[in-house]
Amino acid sequence: MKSPYLERAKHALQDLDADTIVSVYAEPFLFEDIPSDQKIVNIEDLRAYFQALFALPNVAFSDIKAYESEEFAVLEWTWSGTNRSSGEAYKVRGASVIELRNGRLARETIYYDPRLPATA
Image (cartoon, rainbow, N blue to C red; front, side, top):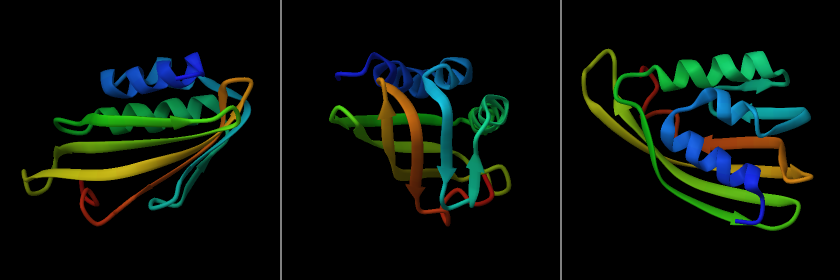
C-alpha cells in the first residue's frame, strides 16, 4: 500500500479499533454508509459509528483487500458476526470506495447487502 493511513485503517478494521480508524480521516471528511442512509462529517459521530459496529456480537472483519492509486482506493472486506435476535451467524461482503487527500481518507462510501445483518 502507498498510503500509511490506509494501511493503518485496514489493520484497525481487523483489530476492531475505533480510535485508530478515526485517526486516519482528513479534516474535513465525509463518511457514507449507503445501505443505512448515514452520512457522517465529524470525528465523534464517526467514532460512535465504529464503536457501535464493533460492539455487535462476534463481529469481525476479514479478507480485506486494498486497491490504491494516489487519490483513490477501494477496500473489499467481509463483515461477519452473530445476529442478536436469531443467534444465527451472518457473513456480508462489502466494499469501501475512498477518496484520499494527502494519504488520509477524505471521503469513504461503503456498500454492502443490508438484508443479511439487518437486525444484527
